[in-house]
Length: 488
Picture 1 (cartoon, helix red, strand yellow):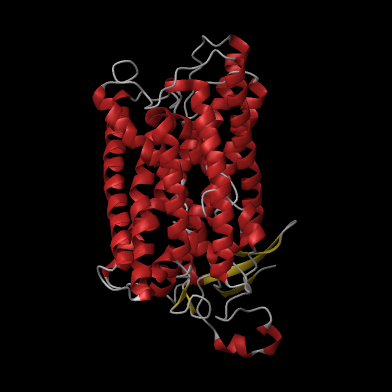
Picture 2 (cartoon, rainbow, N blue to C red):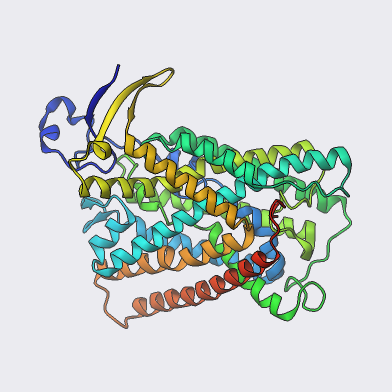
């Protein structure tokens, strides 16, 4: 039995009639929306590439051994620590912008664009939307690539175990991208962020599992020897790389590290799921400090121990590049964990896109039943599910689009580097700093204003050169690319 009713999502407008009804007041927040239920404990265990993942490890960890190999023992850990401090600092600034003008009692801003609109306004709102949603689309494409590579690695690992390490065991990524897309089509029918907690916890467990396995295998390889060749400055010109390759790969490595700290992109959207008290900005800052500290410890360990294990020849993805062949079942387990983690992480990053498009379409065509009408359907083991025709069609089309683009550009390291470089400056550095300056009405050319502006400009230059290096790497990969051959 089904019943039809008007759409009610996390983007619904404030309804005074509902708020004034005493029977429902206890289930509503101060803005008339359903009461938020997110807790700091959820944040600390949540998903891995965003604020939900505060306490766990993102898939960017897979490329950190390669990144350290390009930078060396001195610059590698230094860059990791620098990105962690910058991300923590600007994330605390952004957390205070969720409510405005007062960070505790002000009006809620539900999305990153709403935050920029409330604090900066003008064309910067559109620039923020372009940067945020463009990055989110890129991340979902990148996750499709990474998940398929891990699935392929399981098949290849078993092939190597059965036939020997000398066999090429080539396998196409495309069928596994299709499998991943089919799973995402089903999960994409989850209405919004508030329904993702179970998926977030599962993804968190998986991320800790594969990171720990990778770290353990690297430690075992270092202990077993022979010791790999490492240097203070990373890959050696004339031995490992040419002079031009050294420059390009250095900046690509910085882009990969920036992607590993792709933290602020959906921070506001996740903060909107927190219940209060305590104040949302305080809970988010607490979760941010715990999460980034935990993440950085794992990143430094995995990157440095991975570099010690593989040296300057570290693979782009240290769990799928087959630096490890045995025990094959443990390598398989790690790659299965990666795939499961990315299934959940994909949803966290695409939900803001879904919500934005659906809310804009609802405002543009408010009378359309196709867009706005929902039907309550009773599902076994689930209960009532709100089915919406537009959500089914649009979200399915989006997942298919990302899968097709992933098939066209199945390049792991350079794609991560481009995403990290493109998103780090605008979303992690520029907008949080500009909003802080605007909120505090900071005098121009004061000491704090000056050093914040210098930080922003330095990060812009780093992002630009890292993006250029990633584009150069992608161009090189496209020339070398042979279809039906797995990309590592």
